[in-house]
Image 1 (cartoon, rainbow, N blue to C red):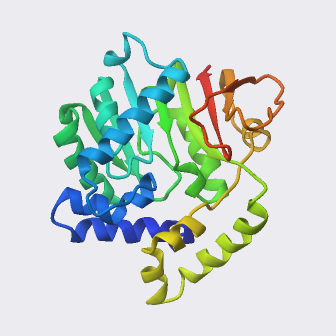
Image 2 (spheres, helix red, strand yellow; image 1 turned 135 degrees about the vertical axis):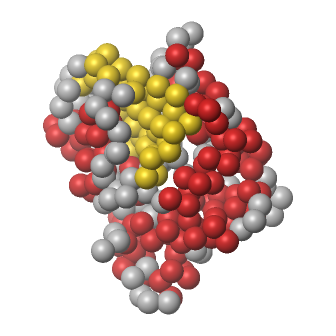
Length: 273
């Protein structure tokens, strides 16, 4: 049975299949990937936002250098390719992974227009928790605004998968969401919304509404204290957070800040042993 938190992604994937132009797809599904909307939004605009964020994060984490063009990257949660296009220009090979096959088809189109399609390989994460990629494949495994939308155990499984597919000495950089004060209201409302998505007929319709998805798509909250004890094989661990948030005080993990990180988010950046 499909998990409730997958419903808006399946709905957006269906919407992407129904649209003829890539610009229409962005206008219909853009709010799923970067919360940008607008009747004049284009795929070029969409990719540009991904280019900006990707470059900023990799620079802040110290993960871009002169050798990047020879490296392999695995992206967990590519969507329709907002960041994948830019990543394909930066890395020698990119594995784009997503749970929706329609998104992967659109991702290939996006990279064909704005990236390096010869460097792209797509992988369908059919069960939402296992990457169909061999061990020790990636120099870097990267995930942005994806794991917060997974069921709790699936998110932890995907972090362990990120370690598995990354070469010894390679790096992982994965983005997660943790608790903030407003979750006292948002968390129960989100659970109610995800329950509504199961209602036949009405559920898929409301899942396409931006307000409903914004409320219900955040399927887990994971703190560093919950993640690090169950993820093995890491060294040089750093927790990147917003300067507006207090340190997490995790023993053995360096505390870092970056202005571009949302207060409710944090990044796990580490090397694989």
